[in-house]
Image (cartoon, rainbow, N blue to C red; front, side):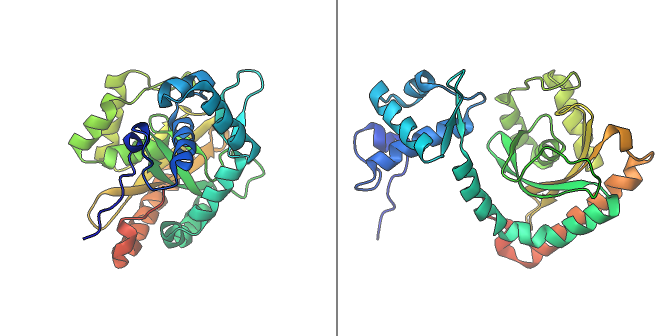
Length: 278
């Protein structure tokens, strides 16, 4: 019986590459992963602390990743963030994802019914990642992009996904979830945020009332797999000044219908219940 290789970071720490001949690659991946997961763009010192690599090694890795446009370094703060080439590669993968394709017809229908921008997002750690965005026909465009990571606590997609998790799993995730302020409307009190999730779970849909961006309202709902677990979330995004008088009828009803239709499509294709997206 063949034994799978140990791909854990500890294998590299011990001086033995997880797969023969890939030690250098493993170090590059550890740096990329840390930058991707960091709440704020880390600098070289932060990378040294996180990885345990010596300064020359970190400098060499960062220089190589910046040269290949896998990382971008802020000239003023020296903070590092994921670069355009990495995002382009990821976007190509997401663009071909079965989940995205399964949802596309309903996303288009939802955009046309509401006249607003719609997003499809999947969870990635403490964030949601947009894997599809269909713009409103309005002249005013939203700043979000495919491949963008957004926090769970300030977005309709994030709250919808969290609220749809089993209670124990959600509680465990919330214990370590930071609630930084993005606007004056952001819920930063943990009790208030948990109450919001309880209300979202009861209603079956979520809202972002200028909590992520001022002037922007979003309504979200989870897309569940055949086993009932949330796989993704869909949102309708509008601007405060053009929001309809009856948002429940204008946005939420068609949103819930779209999520239900996508869930039915997923149930027809069992492989979609476990999409390998991230």
